[in-house]
Image 1 (tube, rainbow, N blue to C red):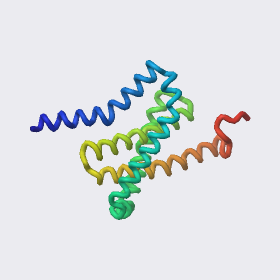
Image 2 (cartoon, helix red, strand yellow):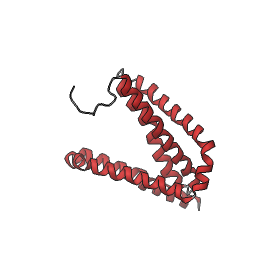
Image 3 (cartoon, rainbow, N blue to C red):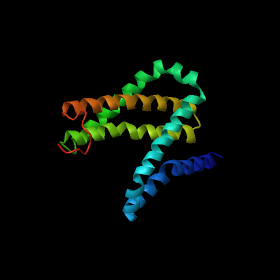
Length: 166
């Protein structure tokens, strides 16, 4: 019986995490023009889908979500700081460019929350884990927006549009 449950978990993990990544990698390798053409649309769909999942998790038990913020926000902030620090330290091993280090640091935590949410909801069926993932995600968004604003201010880019020539 345990072996059958293990097969089911592997199958779900493959479908939820492996298949989308494999399709994306295949498209970028085999048909890069198609991947490039549809990337903006797919990114918007993914962003909208993530937002919808975050909303549905909060809407499932709003009192549980709001009531847990006092305990979960500080914990989420510590995880964000830790993952950002780990990303920055990892980036220092491969680049001296501060922009690249910042990008890798910011990306470190973002990847983890998507995987955690997918595992919590689909594989474990544990909505309370997903509530923490939502808190983590929202905390990370606020902290990363503040970090981006600070970086842009330090670089003298605050208020400039990306891609605009100086």
